[in-house]
Length: 297
Image (cartoon, rainbow, N blue to C red; front, side):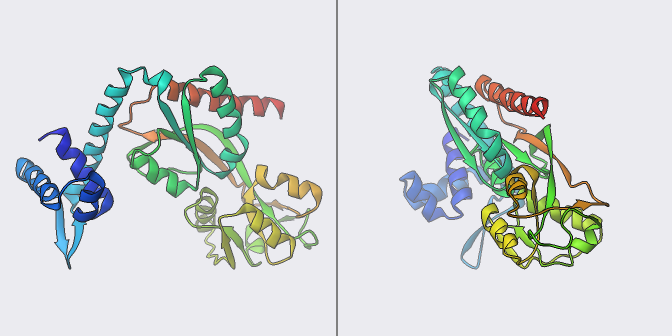
């Protein structure tokens, strides 16, 4: 078994197809098939099954992928570290929407001033997409709002924020105090499933025994704010993202008597990930940025 076998297996796993993997690796299909067969024979396991002419990964294949991915990554890290990775490499960081809007730009600027030769690649996406990217070794770490559920991911709390109700400007409930159940009687305009906001709301609704069916879902906070402004329903959004719209009177808010809507924010990385010095330094910049923001408040 060689590193070449592992890379071929990873390509097949990610492509879900021998043909596509062979194309991406610039190999013949028989050569790819033979490499997979050699792996299976070496370990005495079945990695893939063909079901209705489609390639399906087995339970053993799922477990093997986690090891293979990080063995390959460790080798890549060894290679690049011998070539001054921390000065010439690239640091890949992800963030969910609120952190990406308010914290990430300040962190990137501070990091660039400290390490002008290190390239940074930043991605802002929803929580589900970032967790998958971490599992696929497409990110070195991510700063995320809300819970992290995958057991292969390590999550370290570094901040806290909260959601607030967002109401039409002329809502009868504006500036009042009300129970959560009274709010969700209104049409709900929510972020998409998989987003950190939606995951937190689904958990809160479940804790209160509330079944909520959104009238509208969107990946865009601005689209939701516009829809609320027009009176199409209400929403729940991060306080930082909605604060300026509330202050200007574009939308309104209220107090909820039976729910704080507070949630933790985490720095997240794969448990088997080797964190470079530059990754650790950027994580510290996230912590410092939040500490400075809390001091100003």
